[in-house]
Image (tube, rainbow, N blue to C red; front, side, top):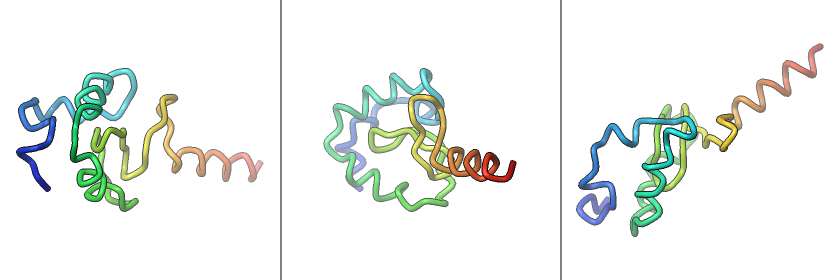
Length: 86
């Protein structure tokens, strides 16, 4: 990855360690100005990567994208399985 071209290169890495809204807003604004988000996404996109944080302009928890309601696909699948049981 072209780390020197990344918009986050001059930012505190801790800024990107958040995975809940609204704490991620500042990190997402940095990503929105970045020209290498696709390269960044190729690193975290494989599910089960266990990545938590902001990368490629998206929020991740345990390798799943987090929605604005702070849920992940995994959360929704587990909830659906639970409601199907009973």
